[in-house]
Every structure is written in C-alpha cells, then in structure tokens.
Length: 120
Image (tube, rainbow, N blue to C red; front, side, top):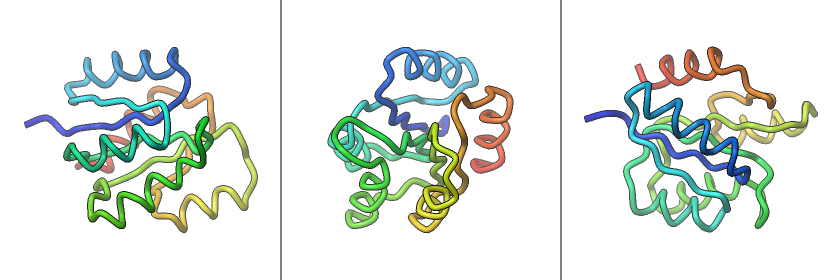
C-alpha cells in the first residue's frame, strides 16, 4: 500500500500542483484547506506524512498537530511550510513536532527528497 500524504494548504493552486506531483510519485494524497478540515481528515484517515502550511484561514497549522496528538493520530512525519523566515516560528514548528520547516516557495526536488527520507 502506498504511503499517504495529507496536504494542508489554503492555496488551491499550490494544493493542486502538490496533488499531481505526489500522485505521480506513487503516493496516496488527501488535502485540506483549513485547520478544521485537516483535523477531520487526520482523525479519519491513516496519514503517513503531513505537509502543513503554518498560516491557514482559520488558525495556525500547528493547531492541527496538537489536535491530532490529542486523538493519538499524529502522522509519522510532518513538514511545516511557511513564507516567514523568523527563527522563533521555526523553533515553534520544531517544538510542535515537525521534522523540518520548509520556506516557500518550496523547491520540488528538495521536497520530494525530504519526503522520501522521512518515509524510508
């Protein structure tokens, strides 16, 4: 069975590009555009890796991690994505349990390499 990736990103264009990229790479893909949708999907589905935008319309993406942790449904790995380079935000993401923090725009090769490494 192919590993499952949950894309949590409010940009429809970015989400659609990632869905195509990951599906072509052989992954099962789900997507959510809000904290609420991501929590609902994360509680229902087995997620191997979550690609998590930190800034979402209804709150912080880090809320998704804390909620899934409370329901014992944390993915094997989470990669945070942000357009901000502040050290404090990076530290908050790592403290919340993210494996790494990627700065947008995320280079596709780096992203795929990170995913392969985390799911190996």
